[in-house]
Length: 228
Length: 228
Image 1 (cartoon, chains in turn yellow, purple):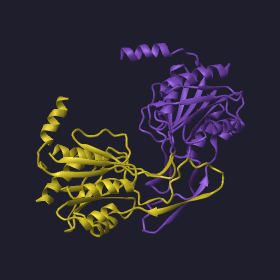
Image 2: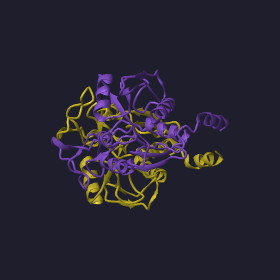
Image 3: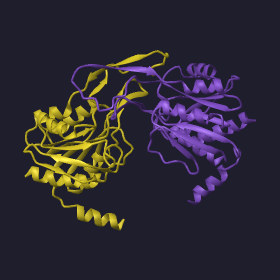
Image 4: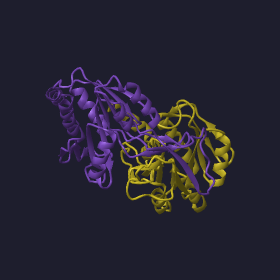
């Protein structure tokens, strides 16, 4: 407890005091029926670490979280959602009041076209699931943003920097965090990550493997600069 | 710790000493690509409680677990799997050595026909996922069993007892645990459950809402009877 108190003391710089930050985290679940869903491997750890770092830096922090077993960081307000559509609505409803939005959630690009009311019974034959595209929340925020600082994530398994660069420009974000989820010590469920920060002016910062909380604290520093 | 020690003392009856028990738990994940999967809402809590109760009763306990964040119960040997096919192989490889098998896992009936090596990029249009049936592990065990006691689960959202009755006979299980996952205080993620035990001779025991560990201890008693 003393160690924690000391850590909190040193990490609390109040550099985001008075700022409102919304962080999204976790992987959305897109139901097929009351039991089955289309999911993804995001554990939510990166987003939760970011919400903690924002709160430690003095920001009023809202965490919009897809299902996860992680505890809510102290002082953070969590809003729980399950699907991409629910996340879309919560984020868009809060967007205009925010100074900073960090989209760390892994939002499903597609959802099943139908969500059965009762558990689908198997019949031993092949089946198909029809999928329809979900709204692209990050792109919508990129189009709507006025003074907000918008941070996006790209989790890729190949051609990371090329995809990330393209995504940053197409979605009009102010900083893109790129991470190759296939590297050992990076990505889903890991307490550490290996990321690069990409900026629209062409700057790129490559970080060595570090804890998700350390990455989150580096992100806070960059956000302070971006807020000017 | 004293309370826990006392609880352990009273619950440890050694009534399954010398018996080998295999318990499956959690929801399998059927990958579409390195990031996305078809999943289900099983938390694994019911299966983990059963493994704990078996171990407390003196059984040598193997827990074959789909992905979950739950801690391994003391003294239990956990084997981690992701997909229905992996669970099938581990269960079938261990089956002949076991005295009791409890299939508490929620195993996907279907898997995507193809598992892409790299993350699938979205293109904004509709898509379909082709699904192929997974092997029916419980039915296979029901056909192969000699002296083993076989316990199955039915988690339903409608017509629970009719489905459960039919499943018990079709799969040749010795006891079927039926639970309506739509009831409050029952089913996925809940620390409590509301179940019925069904037996091939027509007996049925309906339990009130109780903790998953209490249900597991009731299951131990019935297994002791079934082992004769």
